[in-house]
Amino acid sequence: MSEQKNRVLFLGKKDDSCCLKALKFCETNFSAVTAYLGEWGEKFPAEIDEWEGEFVISYLSRWVIPQRIIEKAKCAAINFHPATPDYPGIGCNNFALYEEAKEYGVTCHHMLAAVDTGDVIAVKKFSLYPDDTVDSVLSRTYDTQIMLFYEVMDFILKGEELPKSDLKWSRKPFTRKEFDQLGKITPDMSKEEMARRIRATSYGQWQPTVELNGFVFKYNPEKQK
Image 1: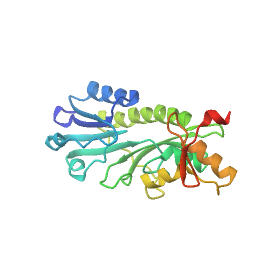
Image 2 (image 1 turned 180 degrees about the horizontal axis):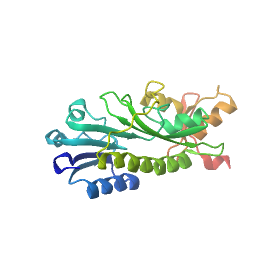
Image 3 (image 1 turned 135 degrees about the vertical axis):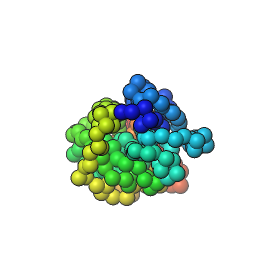
Image 4 (image 1 turned 60 degrees about the vertical axis):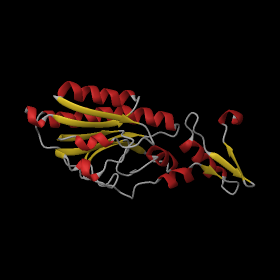
């Protein structure tokens, strides 16, 4: 790849080991990498508007990338989404566990202003098992995502056209409201429904909430042992 086609804008998640691996790979193999790593709630850096180059790479980015930035990429603006096209939006692995999906995976796609709607480049899948948890699914998701990242980067670094997947986004992106609702348990729910929600939304300090007589309690898994 020529020097003039070697400029990359990398947008990712702060303090994430896989994201740092992807960034290091870019810094090793591209001549000019401009990187911004952020957390949920951080303001989109205004200085990004000054960037000019060939590729925008979003890897677990906490920002919704504006159309004006996407259009700055002369070759491609791509995102690595930690789910298959069946689970666009937020809380993807949680909804997959709740729906008791048999498989899960990761997606690389071209970016549009609307989140998780651009043409799919490639998908990499793995099986889900009855004893999987949010933690175990996330672990395999991140391992699979970095593998897909290297595979897609191979096309770019060889100057080859990016592949086109036959897979399409199968539904509208899940919203924050839908995700928050998934983590709520009420007395009128069946035992099975409660169990599905607990499995789908229990992750370390993040636990579902129990609503009872107008009060909201945080589910404590330790008390259930």
